[in-house]
Image (tube, rainbow, N blue to C red; front, side):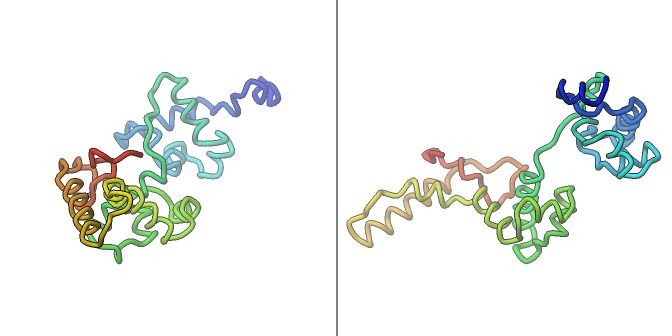
Length: 190
């Protein structure tokens, strides 16, 4: 198939069979799905550089498609954004906000620091995304009446809303223990 035919068919580059086999072997050695392997690991198994691997396969997705075409499930994993948000939440819960650096987070989220900056823009934006994902404040705000008649009524409404959202089931072990997902409050409406 010529390059124009591949473009027309929408298939892009088809990875060479030896690189597909190298990816499958690297996954077997690491006991992880191909989709979870760093491209450097696959390149090392194939005996070529990362740049040469990309020149020959076009993209990691093309390699994953080639693995699937070979009859092997390439697996999958959450996006970098989701891995980073979850890893950052765990890190903050375990060690505090001061421990959250892009380098430490990149290691925990299994990506490069540059990828985190490309995804979030800055550490502040990352922290904002973490609090958006795990903060109970939107659920509490949904529990509050629109316009309390007095300060006392407002404070009582806030306490009732906090208590309703606080007495929810414990989050699953994959979430930080100190933060529950905002959807866990029964009356929260997205």
